[in-house]
Length: 127
Image 1: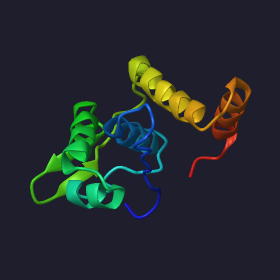
Image 2: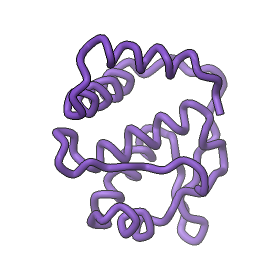
Image 3: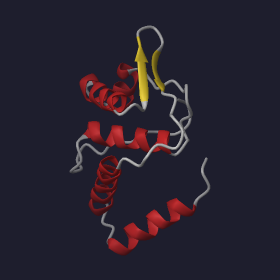
Image 4: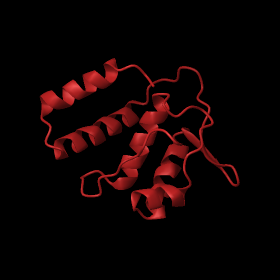
């Protein structure tokens, strides 16, 4: 994973593992991280983010439980093959939205700014 970066706000209201999980899930769902893309090792990402390996491991385990990644000994953690058009997981979408709103509010954004940023993201071409 050389492209997009994961960022964690340890002072924010959203737990670090959830920030990692939601950001990686969004990158996978958005096609930014394609099928087969290898994610950093738990230890590498933990070191890069200044977090405990258990925090990153929990995020990876949740991504694996959601079917977004597959982990194999010796092959690492890779983005899983996605079946055709799967139904939207509204619970996951709600978690992502809540995490985004919490981060935006912590950054001082009001409702208008949050909605404008979401509209701009939806209008942006996929990478």
